[in-house]
Image (tube, rainbow, N blue to C red; front, side, top):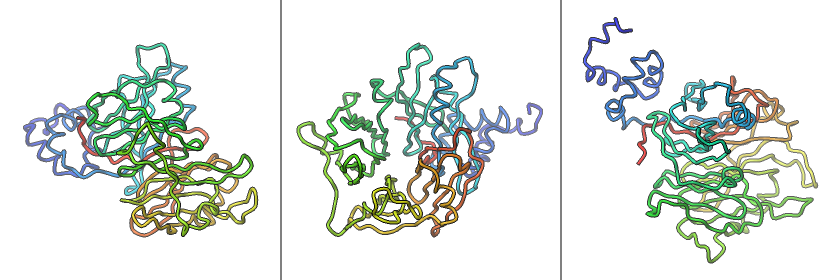
Amino acid sequence: MDASPINRLPQDTLHQIFSSLPLRQIMICRPVCKFFNQMLTSPSFMDLISTQPPLRFLALRPPHHHHHHQRHNSHVSSLPYLHVFDPDQNQWLRFSLSFLPFRSPHPVASASGLVYLWGESLNSLESNRSLVVCNPLTRQFQVLPQLGSAWSRHGSVLVDSVNHRVMVLTELAALYFSNTNKTNSWLTFSANLPSKPRSPILISDSVFALCDVGSPWRSQWKLFTCTLSNLNNSYNNWVCLERHEWGEIFDIIKRPRLVRGKRNKLLMIGGLKSNFSLNPSCSTILILRLDLERLEWEEAGRMPVEMYRSFQESSKLKVFGGGDRVCFSAKRVGKLALWDDCDGVVWRWIEGVPGGGDGLCRGFVFEACLTALS
């Protein structure tokens, strides 16, 4: 590459040429050679293309067995990557996380181009994990204030684009952190939820979660919410969100979970019960959408019967995504099902899932862009 005529061009000229490309094409050019990688990741070039619109990917969380294997087999050399699927190009991509000085980075959430992950210190012999925020495109990272080990094992990480707000939520308590917090520390609040929060999500200034308020032999799911601006230790921050007009909306879905929808919308997804018996079978997977302004539900989609047959015998189903795209995975299916509502509802399969394992995938939406860490 050193003898190539492209090396004779001034750097400013090269920057102007490559800055005319869309962000997706710039990412494809980076791994072509060392010269391209250095040029297209330089601070001056990154600043030049900082206004490029984001790319919406579906990112995979590492499987649990992979994280366990890396922790207890430090002699095994494997570079950490964030694997993402590009629905518009129908292809898998990967971002290297080797710039992070942590062992076994475990991505869990993303907002505004930033990825939040758990990472173990390279210098520590103990399993002491920190919550780290990074941008795989700019290769910048920042370690958030230290947390106790129990939070990394049992807490759900919720993130938002406003002031880089972060919440770590458990059944009994919640930790909250924001760039506007002058103390640069986590604020602790009592959760006071009736049961372990299921699939909590953060939308605007509110957190939503499902809780089982039924009996040991029959589940009864309710939707709970709290407002971040009203967090206070002196009273119960969570309220049950329900309306008489909703009727039996929570009774028709088996094992529901929440996913963030477009704008001020919330998606609730689960198996559509075939009857109201104690342990009913399901006829398909149903997606309901709640308008948080009007508090009205509507059906957003249901999985085609021929596709659902692949999930019918599985006891575990994982759902992830957000906005107008949601992925479904189950053990031994070997591929992901995708609900895509960008230009009308389309159901399709995603093949070639990386990582191996039992096929049970978890993930999140990653809007890849050049957001700087402040």
